[in-house]
Image (cartoon, rainbow, N blue to C red; front, side):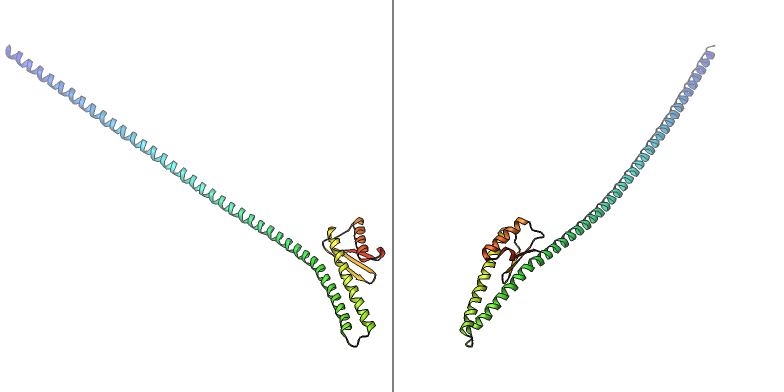
Length: 228
């Protein structure tokens, strides 16, 4: 009887140990499986995160690259447009400057030719008077000249000098009236004056006539005024 009880106790102990071992084995397998699943889930999650990060970086990289390319293209276009605009502006400016220069040159040439007329005309007139005086002086210095010829030559020389002085005075006075370019020609009793203007007013004509009449002792009807 005691032996049976002892055997029964041993059996109970063995069963209990088997049950404990089975439970522990089950628990261990479950934990391993959970650990493996958890690990797999974490790895999958990490892969997804890495994939997401990689995609995001790639997309951003493309965006940045595209934006950079667009900025480069826009910068190139702007540079090209600016260069083209600057080139066109420079060409327009150069053309305008050339046109202005040509106009100024034409105006200067016209003005120069205009002024040259008065300068040249006065030079020719004074040269004529100088030649006349020289001719009369030859008469005075010639041993073959008669006394009457010498007297006449002396009078003509004096008359020419008086005319030259009167002309100089009149031209200077007329210049003070605002007519910078003017020239006077005398032919006997007739006095002609050319004024460098497009038109002249009646009151200005009267002023010029008074100057010439007073300084050159000329009659009003013998004074002829023209414009150039």
